[in-house]
Length: 136
Image (cartoon, rainbow, N blue to C red; front, side):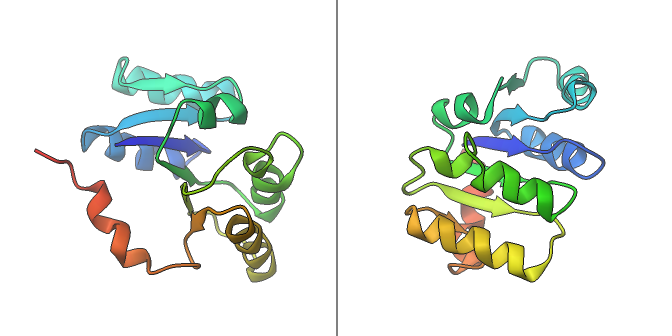
């Protein structure tokens, strides 16, 4: 499965590493270049780096996972001009693992639904767990 991962800080890097270990193709984006380098060094070419949110989505990922520091960053990545929702995300699965306030989460979830995407909290999340299992 091709997964986009945004936010490679203290929590994001280990999460991304585990996805690579499980055999998934990863396309990553982070505003901190050192975080991208840390993940790339650990995975030796198993990770593609996106130069922007646009290029991440254009790479035809099936799922986007965000692991960002706070509500401000989540809203920026999803809602700002040039953010995830400025593009066609119909049918895309979005998983936000950030620790944010409930109002921001609801705002992003509502916009996801309006744009035709599936986001955690707006559907039966347990139904997609099998998507993460590597097909043999």
